[in-house]
Length: 165
Image 1 (cartoon, rainbow, N blue to C red):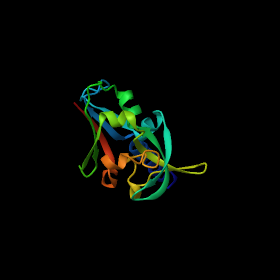
Image 2: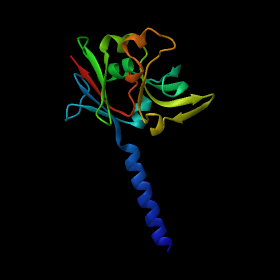
Image 3: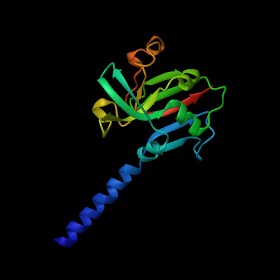
Image 4: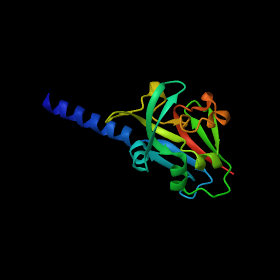
């Protein structure tokens, strides 16, 4: 009985480690940092190792939130994007696509968020709120951004960022 329990626990540990190590975000298109398939992939832990930022925003779908994540500008800098890029396209798990101009990605702290903060508590963004990665716009600090990117452009379940010329 003990031997069976140890085997089951070991299998569960290996299975959970494999899930944690799975990539959650693929970056593709015109990027310098590429693997042999021509893309770059990040696990959630690797994504969280990139420069982090946070902002308070009145999310049109979820209300007042303090989001924590990586700005598009920092992600694009990390993978190396040429200055002539035109669009950054977020691809969601349901294959919907939402584009942000490259210029706006550098100008505004548009974020791929993975967590919310409440006081000192940091909470992973659950699937019910668009996680593990969701696109959020800094509309409280830059209200003019809603003219170009209305509430329907808040992409949930982002699985890929594609850079286009």
